[in-house]
Amino acid sequence: MTRQRVLAVVLLLIAFGALALSNTFPFLDDLSELAESAVTVGGALCALAGVWLWWRGTPDGAPPAGDGESR
Image 1 (cartoon, rainbow, N blue to C red):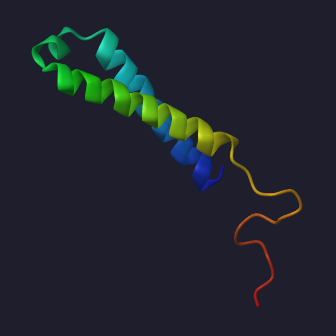
Image 2 (tube, rainbow, N blue to C red):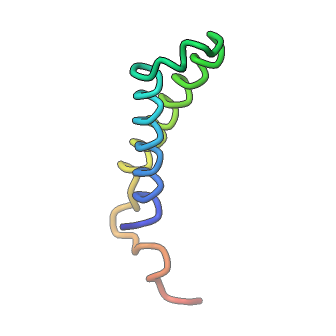
């Protein structure tokens, strides 16, 4: 797997964790509305960035980074 895919998986796991925190665990009720919103928005941003990194690829015909000729 490439670095992009590994980073995408990490970001998606963080997003899943934020989703689980915001919906399941009761200790978030002790936090302020701003903190709860920050967890939710942060999770959504991580999910979007993870999906973007997962689907982003090299242009057609371009060799993967590091496999080209040295100049």
